[in-house]
Length: 105
Image: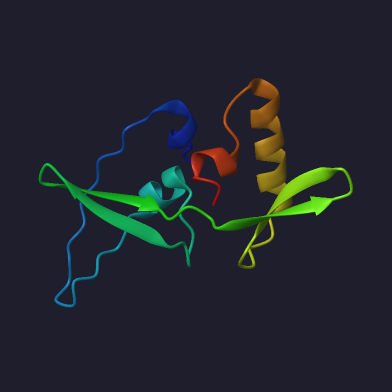
């Protein structure tokens, strides 16, 4: 998987908008930006360019014992063992975690 979110890599690819206004985000772009099926995205037009970004995850703060934790308001997909290992390795190396690079989502 390409991990452009942590390395500042720029990926330029082309796609075509169909008659219904839909477009397919190329796999390399989805992987690099960690977009998954069901991810809500926001479109913004800035200086004639379209920006697409994941909508930040909505959370509620809950007290659990002496700690306050952020709990997603909607169910989230379960992480695979590989995703947990990759995030853990990134944290150990000082790289941003998946939640930090996805806007907490």
